[in-house]
Length: 220
Length: 169
Image 1 (tube, each protein chain N blue to C red):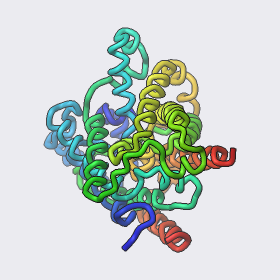
Image 2 (image 1 turned 90 degrees about the vertical axis):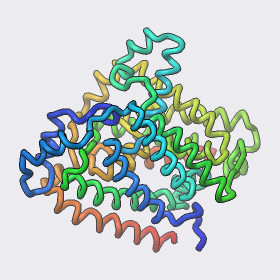
Image 3 (image 1 turned 135 degrees about the vertical axis):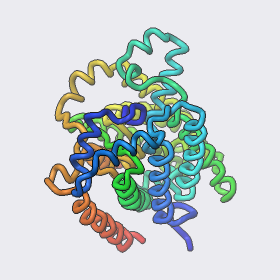
Image 4 (image 1 turned 120 degrees about the horizontal axis):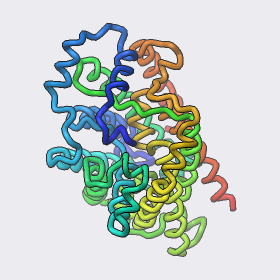
C-alpha cells in the first residue's frame, strides 16, 4: 500500500479533480485546503503515532464486538453460512463512502484511491483468499483474534511476516511483470461507466442497502 | 437482542467503522489498512539480519521498514480487541478454534502449521493485490477504487473455494 506512506502525487491529485463532483472546484479554495491543513504531516511523527494507536484501539474494539475476531464467524463467511462479515463490510462501505466523499467535497480530506492493476488484483486477490481460508483470519482480524486470546493467530502473524518478506524478495521481478499487466492507475468505478461521481454514489449506496436488505431477509 | 456473530449488531459495528474511516482521513490523512504494517515489521526484522540485503529489495525502498501510523494502528487493534473481549467476558485463551478441532482434531502442531502457511500465503497475496480486507475491502472499496472491488471479490472467491476444499478432504 504505497498510498499509505506517500502523500498523493500531483498527477494523482489532478486525476481526482477530474473525477470529483460535477461542480467545478475553484482553484484558490483548493490551494487553501493544502496549505492550511497539516495534511502532509509525517506518519511517523509523535502525534500520528499516538493517533494511530488510538484509532487502532477503536478499530480492534469494534472488530471484536462485531464478532469478526472469531475463527468460526470468518470461516462461516467463506462457507456462506454466516453473513456477519458481509453485513459489517457493506455497512462500513456505505457509511464511509457518503462521509468521505462529502468531506472531500468540502475540502476537508484528501482521497487515497488505490491504483488498479487488473492482473495483480485478481491473482493476488485469489492467493490472499486461499491464505485467508487456511489461516481463518485476515490481517486486521488476525490481530484482533490475538487480542481476544486466539493464540493460533500468533502462528498466523509469523506467517504474515514471512510472506511479506518473501514478496519483497520477489518484488523487483513482480513489479516488472504481473504488476504491469492491466495497469490502469487510480481509476474509479464511475470512470468505467462514464458516470459522474455524485450521480454514481446516489445510485450505488441504495444498491448496497438493497443487498444488505436481501442478506438480512435470507439470513437474519 | 442477540446476534449470531458478535456482541453488537453488525450494522452498528459497520457504521462505526465507516465513521472511524472518516476520522482517520481527517485527523491522520490515512486510510485504514492492516497488511502493510506486517510488511514494515518484516522489513525491520530483516534489517536485524541483513540490513544491506533488506534495503536492496525494491519493495522496501518504496515501503520503508519503520514504526509509523499503520504499525501503531495494528498494535492498537490487538489492545482494542483485548479490551472488548475482557470487558465483555469473551476472552477465549485457546490454541485451537472449536470448528477446526471438530474437523481436524486437537493437534496443536497441525493447526499452528496450517495457520503459519496460511499467513504466509495471505501476506504474499495481499502485497501482490495491493492490500487486504481492510485496505482494499473497506478503505479502497468505499472510495470506489476499481482494483479494490476486484480484489475484494477475488478474496472471497479464493477463500470460498479453498475453505470448501479444506473441509472436504
